[in-house]
Image (cartoon, rainbow over all chains, first blue to last red; front, side):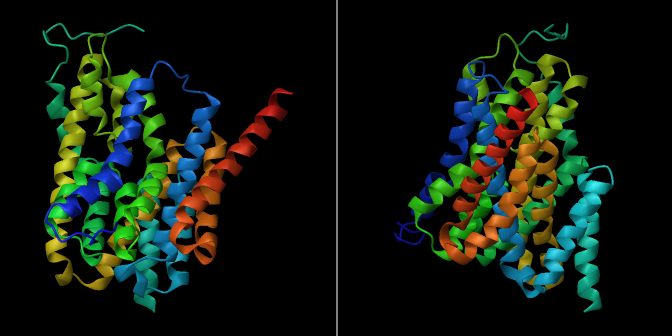
Length: 115
Length: 247
C-alpha cells in the first residue's frame, strides 16, 4: 500500500495516521503506562535510547548527504563542511544550540556566496 | 518529594501557568523549531504533500524526525509497511522521554487520562524547555505550563509550515537551502545535549557515519539498518565500559 494507492480523499490522511502518527504516539502512551514500573536507569532504556539516537543520527546524515530540494543544489563538500563547522563551534563554545546553528548557517551561506 | 500546591488554586492544576507557557513562544528554542518547520513546509511541498495534508500531519505526528521519515518515504514511493517500522524506531526516544517527563509534571491528583492526553504533545523542544524551567514552577503549574508552551508551538509551527507551503516558490533557492539546513544541525546539537550516557553520543556518531554507508548498500532501509546496528554497537560499548568500571 502506497501513499497514492487509493484515489479517495481520506486515504492520504489514513496513511499519515497509520504510517507516522500512531507509530510515534504509541511510545508516549506506553511511557505513561510504564512510568513508575521501570527504573529510569535500567539497561533496557539505555539500549532503547542508543538505537533511537543512532536512528535520528542516520536521518541527520541523510539530510546532509542526500538532501532534497534547494539544498541539493549546494556542493556536497560545502554541506558536510558547514555541518562540521557548526557542530565543532557548538562543542567548543559552551554547547549552545544557537552557536551551532549560527556558525553552520554562516559557513553554508558564506561558502555559497564565495563560489 | 514535597508537593508545592499554590494556595489560590482549587482545581487539580494551576492554569494561570498556561499563559506563561504560551509566552515562551518568544524563546530561542521555539524560534529554532518554528524555523525548522518553515523548512519542513517547503520540503513537504516538494514531496507533493497538499496543504491540508501538511496541516493535518504537523500536530498529529508532532515529532520532526517522524515527519521527515514519512515525507521522505512518500517522496521515494516507500510502501506503508516499510514506513511504519522506520518511524516507530526513530520515535522510540519518546518512551524514555515520556518516562523522564511524567514524574516532573504530575501531581498526586493527576489522572492517567490527563497524562495520556498531554503526552501527545511531548517532543524534543517543549520537553527540554519545560524540564529546564520546571524547578522554577510550582508542581501544579507544570502541566499547564507545558500544555501552554507545546500547544502554542503546535499552532505556530503548523501556521509556519502551511504558509511556506504556499509561498515557497517565491523564495530564492539559497533561503530555502538555509532553512532546510537548520534541521540537521538542530537535531545533532539537541540530541547531543539531551544524551545522558556517553554511549548515546557514540550512537549519534555511529548513526551519522553508518547512514550514508548503508545508503550505498541498502538504499531504501538504510536509516533502519544504521539505527539498529549503530545503537546496538554503542550499547555494547556501554556494557563493556561499565564492566571495566565496576570490575
